[in-house]
Length: 145
Image (cartoon, rainbow, N blue to C red):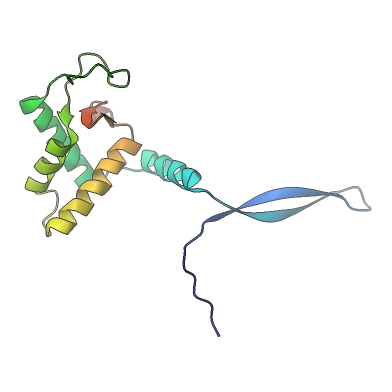
């Protein structure tokens, strides 16, 4: 009989100190601990920041730059504490639509949606793009990456 796992779990090992043996040496062991979703997202963000962006990620950044150049505006609402002053933004929906129309993905609509989701999540994790209240903007020059 085999057991079927219904849900994937991620664990880490934590060293625990048990005391000292008769020779006075420290005795340790490991305890298995689950990693919560916040830790997983943090580790993914760290990994993304240390690797090179994919071609699709860079294409999404180029599409955003073009959209901002053509249609960028300062958000009309007062909750701009997270949006830098005088920065040009476009609506997230505009960026997504432009990415779907680009050659970022040559697949069907589902493939385009997945490609955009991965690329936009990657840009946000790398802090190359900011997002607040449905608005997106570029936070860094591409030449610095």
